[in-house]
Length: 216
Ligand code: DX5
Ligand code: ZN
Image (cartoon, rainbow, N blue to C red; front, side, top):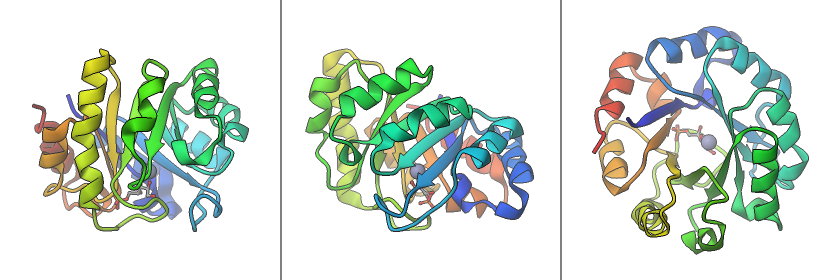
């Protein structure tokens, strides 16, 4: 089944609990939680207490750390209750160590790639991550248009994982909507993040059902 993770960034922050309950009722699998530090990306979002509140609201939390020196935050987000923690390959000098740290903290370990980053950096990390997050927009903001050259990477990553016999989630983040989702799944995505498209959908359950039905 395709997993669907609505991004909290597009929610109404005045009623986070209700917004997350809405994603649960729609059948979503995770709350996608975008952490921004105004250094790795030109924007700031939320931190530990908000993640704790998101966990309490009911869905497992998929924390996407768009921060420099992510190793400083991994234990804190694990303690706050994140189920998945994803760090950017571009944000640390020691991605291997950061992935190990995530697993040691009891979470699934994700590695995110910016649109301009080659998937070649995954080759010597096979088996060390549980998820690859393919950014299909430049990170920092919701509601952007999908970058098609980044979409091409999905199939390449799918091939690399299959050749290595590694069973990892391929998550796609940025510009996912009902129109773009089919080609992402076709190329090998198994988890889709949707911010503006989910929260802007007139019927959240129909939106999630549609994405889940794209299973190959
Ligand atoms: C962007 C974030 C995304 C964002 C996606 O930096 O990582 O998760 O919320 O928003 P949409 O789905 O609107 O492109
Ligand atoms: Zn994200």
